[in-house]
Length: 80
Image 1 (cartoon, one colour):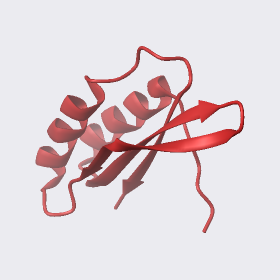
Image 2 (cartoon, one colour):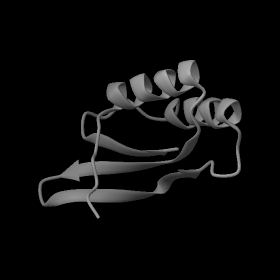
Image 3 (spheres, one colour):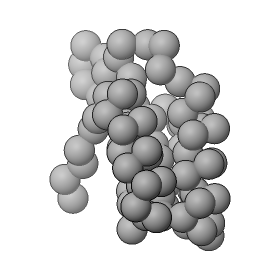
């Protein structure tokens, strides 16, 4: 499996694109870039797999509102 990690602003742009195009966001994971690698944030995980496109976008926006202050943050979005 290949993971692609994106920064905060890119994640926001993808969420906005999903909203415009009616795409479901299945989940988001947050990671922190450390000197020895990329570490998952066990509290920064959200599962929206049971939500509609509109619900998943709103939930993703709420999730992302808690982050974006650290330069070392990375995100992985799973979309349908």
